Amino acid sequence: MAFFLLPQYRMMVFSVKWLLKHSSLSLLNYAGRHLEATVAITFLLVLLFGIVVRCEEQKYGLLQRLLNLLIDELRRRWKLYFNAAVLLILSAILFQFYLGAPRYLAVYGGKLTLLFLMQMGNIIFAILLLRGLLKELSEGAMTPLALLTSLLILLELGALLLSVVVPRNFGSFGFTNWAIRVYQYLVVISAPYVADELREIFSVKGRILKRTAVALVIVGIMVSVINVARPPAIYDYPYYWTKADIRLVSHVGPGLVYINDSPLPPFNSQALSFLGWACGVNLHPVRGDFGGIPSPDFCVSSLCHSPYPYKALTLSALDTERGFKIIAGAAPKGMTKWIGEVIGNRSSAVNGTVELIVGNSTVNPLIARLESGFLLPVQVNYSTVTGPTFRYYQTIKAGEKEGDVRKGYFVIEFVEVNGTPALVVEGVCWDAVAAGVWFLANQVLREPKKWDYSWIVGEWEESDGKVLPFLKFYPEDKNGFSYGDRIKIVAVGKP
Picture 1 (cartoon, rainbow, N blue to C red):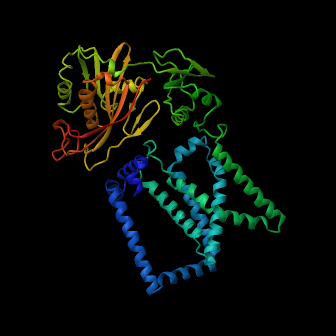
Picture 2 (tube, rainbow, N blue to C red):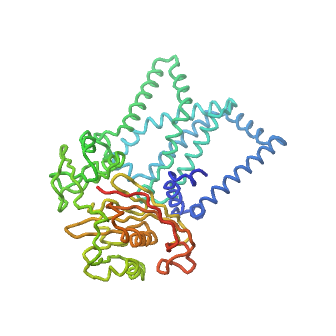
Picture 3 (cartoon, rainbow, N blue to C red):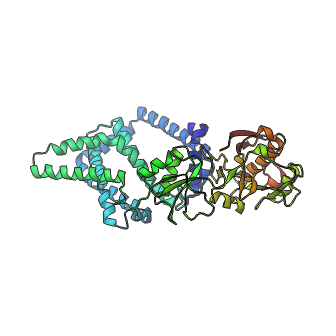
């Protein structure tokens, strides 16, 4: 249950829920909507099953007799079962390829033979593992290692079947290679079996047989190392870092990276973004013909770094005398009027000097344009809030119906773009946006001198069981922002 209680696992739990709720199997849909209850019930059933098995074993010993029959069968025909297991593993590899064929062929340049050649190390390892495990089981030695290895193999096959029903082609949620993830752990656990089999193979007396075995093992090791390194000469895999990238990151604060004389982004743009994230900077490769970008202040090879093409303003410098111009996008009916009332009718000026832009990139096209142009220091998407040196995962708890939320992050940020001041209140949901507007009106605008920052990241949480009328998405909705809810500031900053 620690996964549900510890905040660092919040995004993982959300991902599991999303994956199950969007699978093509009704049972998994239900489990995704009631994940906590499903895990608790499953744990109790496993515990009850263990008690029943224990009582049955003490009274009748049926399980032990079945285990003895299995061991006797393996002892008599273990080579037959070994050959069947090898065919099963090869079939599983082919099925895994079928699930992700377009992606795998793209990585290997469309060459099917190269794909299977580069998987030779995994195939040899799996064959040696099965041989060693079946030999040990046929000898009646159900050691903890044998039990754990057997469970991981069953889990891997289950993960392969799960890949059939989970959603595809949706970013990181579209992976169909869960079996490969389990196999990575299986390699570490089962290495002793492979080592024993290699020792036995290398001790054979036939010179030709021994040399053939050694050659196969060397080839398997070599292709496995190449698989890890993924050199661009073999793989069409653009996720790697160059020396220039690493040199560049040391010079980058909150900023962006682009190619100085090329209309195309860096070939390894996604890897470069990940490198920036790991180093604590918000790093975005963009097109070289990006309009309005200032001159670079540092270049490595064709990669250049420039500060963001906006001017960050402090909230303490807000001039509200001439009013705001509210741009609310596809806000719920009545919300724009409420915003004007909350900030004390200072928004009555249609042509106010400051644009008050609310919503997020999904519901407000202006915010989408600002974020796509890297004109906001803090950006919000469906799952994360990303700033120059931080990242928060969204905290919405998925409910039974649309709009049934109890938590959410909001961001208040103040920038100047093309000479126009823009005050942006963005959130992961409309309730969080409303909480941000309420905080802006009752804290920032009342005492602006206290807020000498360019951005504020806050967290709203339902606490009074009430919801403002325009945020009720169905008649029984009691989860949503209201004036009695809790608001906590989690980050503030300025360039």
